[in-house]
Image (cartoon, rainbow, N blue to C red; front, side, top):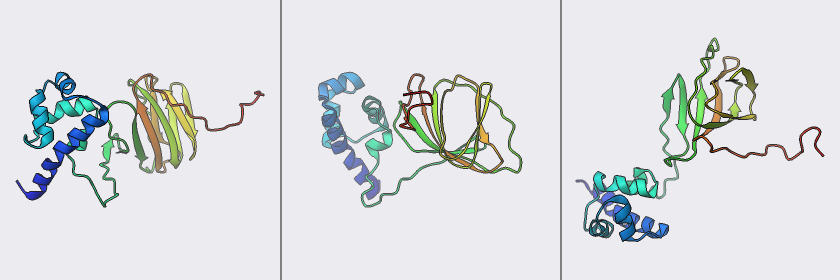
Length: 198
C-alpha cells in the first residue's frame, strides 16, 4: 500500500469514533445494530483493526451516510465539489446531494435540438419539484401541457404521467428535487394573498 492509502485508512478510525459520539451511540448499541462485535468496533475506532468493506458497509447504513464519507480523505484547502454527471434519456443530471434516502437534488440539462422531441410521458413512484434556471421548459403532466420560463417552479406527484423537454428546441437548465411519495416541499413564492383573498 502507498503512503496516501495508509493516510486515508489511518483517518477512518477517528472519523468513525467522532461520528458515533456525535450521534450519541454506545459501542454496545452499534454492535447490536450492525452485527459487528463490540471488540471489533473498538479496535476499528482505535486504529488497531484495518477498515474493510465488510465492516464499513453496515456502519454506513446505520449512520445513513455515503461510504465515501467514512473513508474519503478530507479535502482540506480544496473547496471544489467534484460532481459526476449522469447521462440519461439524452439529458444530463448532475447530483447536488449525496445523502442516501430522503430528498435528492439534481441540476438537469436538456440539450438544444434542431427539432423539439415528441413527449413520451412516464410514471414512477415519488414526488418532484423543479425550478427553471434557463431556457423554456415544456412540462407535460397528465392532460396538461405547460411552458415554464426561467424563474417558474412546478411540483407534482410522479405517479401522474409526465414528461420534461424543451419548449422551443433550445437548451434548458433546471433544478430538480425528487423525494419518496409523501415527501412534499412547501414553497411560498409570493407573499401576497391569491386573487380574491383578503
